[in-house]
Length: 86
Image (cartoon, rainbow, N blue to C red; front, side, top):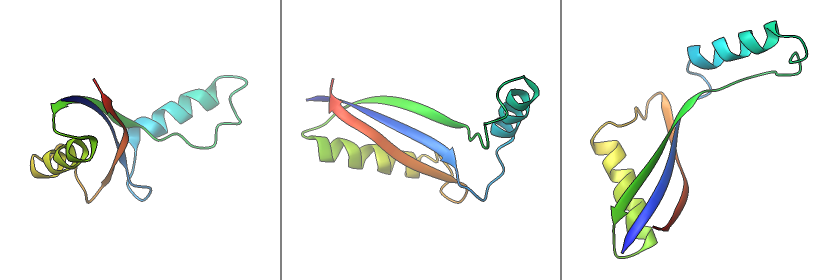
């Protein structure tokens, strides 16, 4: 069975986020966006994987991201947003 796994990688709260800081600064520089108090950037991955079931697909993607260092667990958070049949 083919599954689509959506993953978000984002910096932990304590880690600097230069991209988010730049976006916030640029939004604040534009009139009317001074209500923006914080911006955090991240990465979005959509991974298609063959697996017997949803739980196995999720586990394989988490393991893959850790073992292949697709993200840094010291500075980043990995969140699986969605797992669905593809």
